[in-house]
Image 1 (cartoon, rainbow, N blue to C red):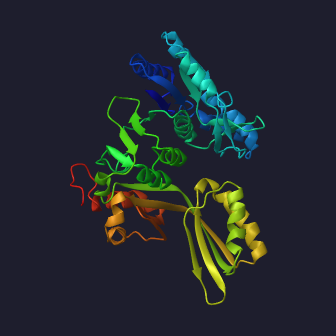
Image 2: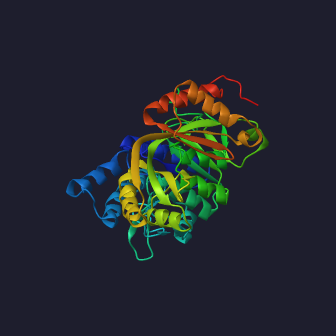
Length: 409
């Protein structure tokens, strides 16, 4: 089998952990598997490097920031290759530009455009374990780029898709995908398997176990994906195509996201082209807009509210102020003390009353809903940030997701 494995920052946090990872890889190699291993930087290293840059200037040039932070993965990939070689295994480390992994030139948030697999194939044919630095790539002009937070997951899945790997394993500090964050809900259950679509909704709603773009790639290219812990040998969670068994489960999980901010515009001209003028510059800046609610008014104007990542809140607000000045918008308000809670489950497609149960549960606990969005298998509510943990626990209990509870049919 050709297996792509990815090890996160906590899995390679120090030399002892890197040796443990190497021992795990060696077990796979002894069974005759071909291995491509993707690694993140050591835990905390990327933040340390960003802080160094920001100690010099609050807004470091993004091209130079990518040059700086990409060194974290260079360290771990070479250390792991050295460790494997010291154990008697042929190994080689490759940086993003050496593969090469070509990306767009949107620094700090680049997207993968193409991967050339010839070099990796050649190294594998020589019986080497190939260790690839995650999170990074290169533009057509030769500039180093990074893929944003969680980008190593994307590197691993993209490589698995390009190489047509038999399996992609994502190793982290948790044993799999749970019905809720175990730090908030101690009796949360580990799910044996989750559909691509459910996992995509979970990732987009705040579940940190997998980066959203990596799930998108896995779903598009049908990459078999397993999330498991690098700290033990417990069975993980399989992310795969939906089956009849998954459709029976009403709600698979409850997620939350505190990285949310809300921007409200009052008195927006209600005519064609205005929305494009508002959201165009935000998209060009690489800022993702999540929920959007527009309410018409009798005076040919409208009120518009939308959410963006809290980390992009200041930048988005500055852009919006410039745009709204041109459009003659009456008033702008911003709020970065909100959170989004979501329930996700393939069974929602064929069950009614789920939304009502969610709203009743939040109301029972005195939690006001500011915004609502839905999809076939997800319902999300924006609430005051201070009620996040209460909302997650209440919804987890209301839908019977705790350990030992019977699944609702």
